[in-house]
Length: 420
Image 1: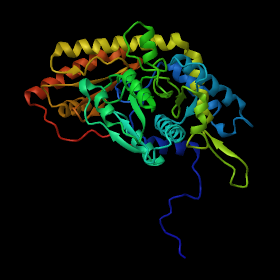
Image 2: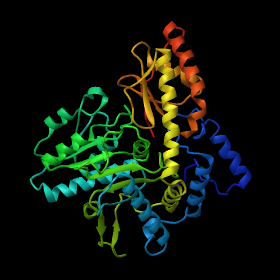
Image 3: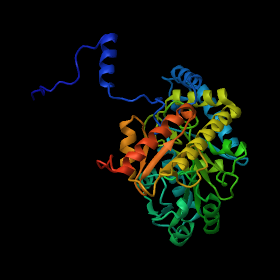
Image 4: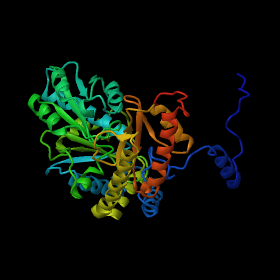
C-alpha cells in the first residue's frame, strides 16, 4: 500500500534556535496569560509566586504520581499536606479526606461518580440516578453525568441571581441522589444559599456537593478579613464534598484541583481498582491514571510559600480593587455590578446599553473578559495583577459606554462562547 504524500512528521529534528523561532511564529497571535488587561482567566499573585510555582513544577515535571508510593514518595507527602491544609481552610471535621485532581472538571466528575456509588449503598431503591443543578452550575456536571450514567435536572431560574432552592426542592424525586450549589458560580459570581441546599439534602438523604472551584481559595480569606460570606464550606451540616481549584486562586501551575470529602471513608466510592490484567492491581482515586508530579509539587510549594497570611493579603488587595471598580461603574451610571459579589470575580451588566457592543468595544481596546449570555454581560476575574489598572479600565469602560449610548458603536454580533 502506497504511503500518503502528506508527510507531516519530519525525518530530521530541528536545532534549538530554529525550534524556538518556529514556536515564536506559531504563538505570534497569542496573548500573554499574565497580561494586566487579561481579566478572563489570569490567576497571577506576583512574580515571586510564579517563580515558586515554576521552580517546583520543573523540579518534578517528569515524576508521575501513579508511582508515588514506589518511586516518588515526596509526591505522596506533598499531596497529603495540600489536602490537610485545604481541609483546615474549609472547616472540615476530623476524619475528612481528599486528593488532587487535574482540574475542576475532573474534581466534579469524581464527585458525581462518588455520589452515584454512595447512593447505591444508601439509596438502593434508585434505578435511574439523577442530580439536580442550579441554573448557573458548571457544565462539567452534565459532562460528568454523561460519563457515569446519571441524568440531570437543571433549574431554569436564579431568583436574585442565586440558586432557586424552592424549585430544587420541588424537583427532588425518588431517583434523586445529589444536589449541587456553587460558591460562587462563574456566571453570576454570587454564592448560592449552600446552607439551604444542604438542609434539603439532609432532609431527603442526598449527597450535597459544593463547587468552590473559583471561590475555594478566596472566600475563606474574605471571611478572615471580616467581610460577610454566606456559609459555604464543611462547617455547613450536610455538605458532603467540595471542589476547589489549586490552579485558580491557589496560584499553582496548571493541572491541579482538589476534591475534598467530609468523610474519608467515602473514598471507597471514588476509587477504581482492578486486578484483571497480568500486571497486578491497578487502583486510582482519579479518572486519569498518570498525574504530573509538577502540578502537585507546585500546589504544595505555593501554599507553603504564601501561608494563610499571604493568601489573605492578596485577597485584601483584590477586594480593594473590586470596591474601586464598583464605585467607578456606579459613578458612570451606565454599567453596574450584578448584586454584591462576595469573592474575587464580578459580573457587569446594564439596563441601558447593549452589552455585546460594550464587550466588543472593550476588546478592541485589548481588554479580555468572559461573557454572559443571560443576561448579556461581562465576567471579570480580578487578581492582584489588576490593582494598578483599575483607573484605565474604568476610563475605557466610560469611553466605550458613551460610544454605545450615542450609537457610535453598534454590536457586530456574536454569542458568549466558552470553548476549549
